[in-house]
Amino acid sequence: MLFHIGQDVMLSDNDVVGVFDVESTTADGQDTAAYLSAAEKNGDLVNVMALDVLSRLDTPRTFLVCEEGGRRRVYLTSLSVDTVLKKMRAAQYGGKRP
Image 1 (tube, rainbow, N blue to C red):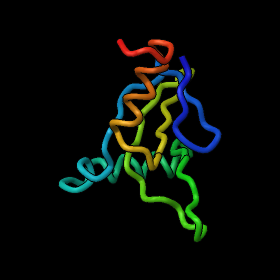
Image 2: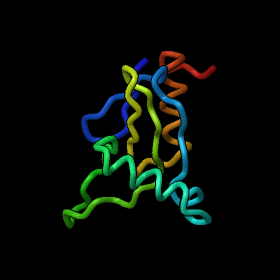
Image 3: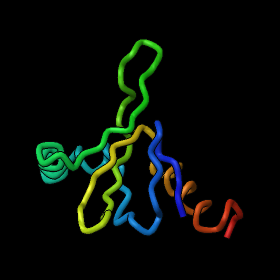
Image 4: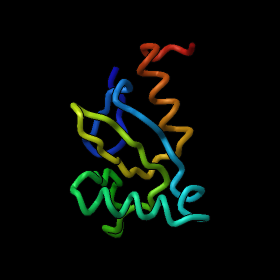
């Protein structure tokens, strides 16, 4: 099922490989920062963060790694990991709690 992660972007819960907190994964190591940088360089990073009232991007909080038609994409969003997981669960269970 599809769920919304920001702006006009909907993802299928079946495509999601992982959901990660930006702060906790980039704070201690360079591996995550290098992974995100490589995804951006390869054109596989999709920024879905909203603009705030001063036309600045929100702070990234979560990134999702997805496998879509054999291509790996990384989505960067200002939603928290908990919110993303709740949206995924709601999509899986038709809006009902499991």
